[in-house]
Image 1 (cartoon, rainbow, N blue to C red):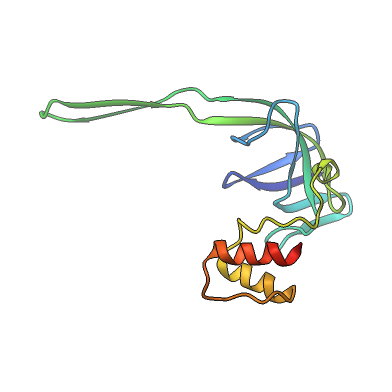
Image 2 (cartoon, rainbow, N blue to C red; image 1 turned 120 degrees about the vertical axis):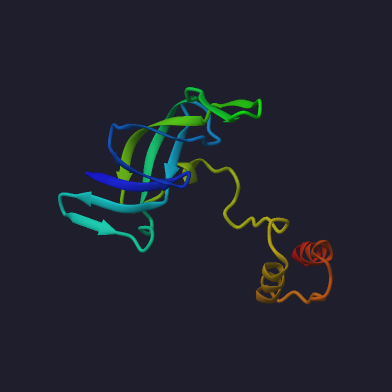
Length: 159
């Protein structure tokens, strides 16, 4: 059984037990992660292709280590002009060990969330989303007001 997942702008073919090196993730070593952008899953039953992703599918893994790759040196120069420029770069990466490929089901990180599912962050919403949220909850607001005023009105009406 294998899957094709997308993370960090790249696609990876993974199987259970594989250790892959991907772009740096905000996770510590030993922490479990779920890669939910699954493009394809192939097993004994057949192949499932997403449009663009498979709904409810994810790949569970554990972070092995975070680090930096070998240095890439770029050297620029212009002939006869005494111009030389040497730069180096070390790309950060995360090594992930694939634990399981799941077609549908509840994610491991969802089980550990301490925040209630109904709690919505109003500050991260755009103005149009705030207006729509207020209208669906029956809260009257001034649509020409600023985001801060709309958030205050919604929070006051929710209490």
